[in-house]
Image (cartoon, rainbow, N blue to C red; front, side, top):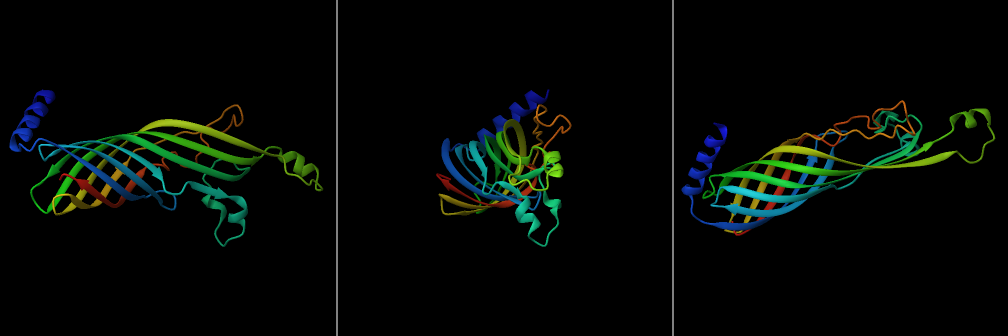
Length: 225
């Protein structure tokens, strides 16, 4: 029943406009409401079908990776509670994130200067977790004269899916340019683990949703609009 209803509405939307298929490109700059806020830069493009229906692809990456360093944290006025790893012996931790995916949207009032687009994004993410940590604490405690810390490095690459409902309020300038205000929510839970090295830590991430959450920002759309 739902498939029939969707097909009927889709047919009505396509019949309402008869402007064919056009292409577009876009850039988005958003801030994720997560640990201390994180900025993403998104780029993409796709097609607009009969003014209303939008089908696109995008790539997205952290403008700056998540980063935590014991030395820097120890030499500022803030506490050490900003750590992003559950490894209590971590010296520094870096998390890079790259996302590719598709976008399906519906444009409201395409003939007006002020418009809105309701969209859903489906992404596939690559997460790189790199950490240096003290590998032998007992050796340090037993030898106060130790000159070189027993340090090891851990590098983990993890992949997972995410989904983001998004709304865009747009102002159209001429026939080929729009400015957008963007808001949405990204479901992006992830677990980073290496049970061979840390058998007692299920997830090295302090927050398994640190790559997700609500977000807002602005964007630019250009093409045959």
